[in-house]
Each structure stands twice: as structure tokens, then as C-alpha cells.
Length: 302
Ligand code: NAD
Image (cartoon, rainbow, N blue to C red; front, side, top):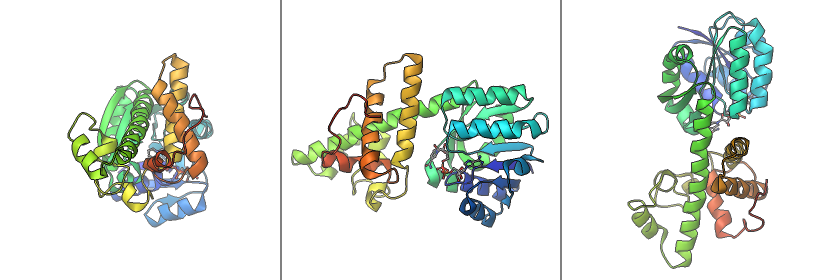
């Protein structure tokens, strides 16, 4: 049994903390949103009134926060009060430089940081089937492994601090681009008189095969579990896809890499979120392709 502080009990952090409780750990949770704290408390998390209170007796601190700014502010507040050698696992999606800066702050204060962003969404967080992409030294990675195994089904050690975040944004850049490509193909297929099922039956077993098509098909019908069959409710929100594409775009700009399709996808999702809001599943972009709402300056609409 480990005493864990869990900071950020939202859509992802709440069920992840609940899985640590189920695994037998004592979890002290903090979230400034009362509703998030109440839901986590109902799942057995011990509510606290501040991040400092939550971390006071923690052996491990897990963070699941909205952004790198939140993470750096949080670390600045809690690091001085932690017991020496505390393991810090950040599962938020943040920019690679922010992840490296947070790791450096933690190491300088005498603690052991890892970045461990996730793939698998809210469903994976609830089911305990997340994939963790981990960056950090071997000591932190080894210590984090048992806890990550209680919140997920797969962990990949990607390299030094920040490497987990690097893998996350590269992966999600591909996801954003392929979702737009698959959406365009279905709209074009319809315009040519193809049924969605006929295109799916060919593409799913041909060279267009990809996760956006076969696991998460953006049109209703061919994949009954995809959010398209529930009017794009739930799933992975467009606003979060836009966040990740922007992180990838900033990383590309910072490293001088020319990600033309990634930048284009960021622009198209920015336009989609403007029109549709950030809440629907990101595969709903097919509706904007169909209704020809994404036209305009495609250079960079951020
Ligand atoms: P969320 O907005 O539901 O939860 C974030 C929570 O952090 C909120 O409840 C907020 O009140 C809380 N918070 C803010 N500042 C805090 C602080 N200083 N201390 C403690 N709590 C604080 O967001 P989410 O969907 O749970 O996503 C969390 C992270 O996971 C994000 O970085 C997101 O990009 C990433 N992510 C989300 C998904 C998804 O499907 N939702 C999938 C993969 C990765």
C-alpha cells in the first residue's frame, strides 16, 4: 500500500484515482472544482482542501492537470514540502519543454520525476486500460511501473524526461491528420455514389487501413462502437485534439521540422472548434467536411 497524492480529479484523473483506491492505496486527492472532488470522494479518495495538504504525507504524487502552466505552478507550490526522494508522476499532456522544466525543478528539489501522458481517453481511464508513454530515468520508471499498471494495461518507456510527451504529441498529430483524411474519403466516396459500408469494406483491409478508420470510423454504421453512432458524444473532445495538435505544431516550430500536414490539421481543427465548440468527439469533423465548413485560409488558422 502506498500513500498517493492525486492532484487534478477531472474526467481522467477522477477515474484514475479511483482505480488506485481499488488497488488498495490510500489516495489523498485535491481539485479546486468541488464537483470533481465530490465524485472522487464517492469513489474512496480522501478529499483535501489544498495541494499542500494532499501531498503532505505522500510517497508518490500523481498529477492530471489541464496544461503545462498548471503543472509548473503546482510543482512550484508543492515541491519544497515533499519528503526527500518523493516520486512525481505527471500524466497530463503538456509541452515537451514544460515537461523537461518540471522534471528539472523536481530533480533539483531532491525528488524523482517521470512524465507519463496517456492514451485511451476517459473510457480507458475508467476501465484501467490506459497506455502510458513514459519519460524519465530508470529509478523513477521502475518505481512508477506498479502504479501505472494499476491504472493502465500498457507502459512504454520512451526515454529521458519529456520523451513521453514527445511520443504523445507525435502520436496525436498522426491521429488528427488521419481522422481528417478518413473523413474526406467518406465524403468524397458518397459524392461518387459509394455507400459508407462499401468504402469501409475496401479501405479497412487495403492500404488506407488505420485506427481512425477501423476502430473509430467517423461515419455511423461500419464500426458500431465509434462515437459517430452516438452523435459524436463522449470520446476524445475536439478541443483536446486541437490542444495536442497545437503542442505538436509548437514543437515542430521549435525544432525547425516542417510538419505541413500537422500544421494544416491544427488549422482545420481550430476552425472546427470555432464553429462547433470544443465538446464533441474529434471525429465529428466529418460533419464539417461534408457541409464544406472548413474552407478558407488553410495556411494557419490558429
Ligand atoms: P479536466 O478538465 O476534466 O480535468 C482537469 C482537472 O484539473 C480539473 O478538474 C481542474 O479543476 C483540475 N485542476 C486545475 N488546476 C488544479 C490544481 N492546481 N490542482 C489540482 N487540480 C487542478 O481534464 P481531463 O480531460 O481530465 O484531462 C486532464 C489531462 O489529460 C489534460 O492534460 C488532457 O490533455 C489529458 N488527456 C485527456 C484525455 C481525455 O480524453 N479527456 C485523454 C488523454 C489525455
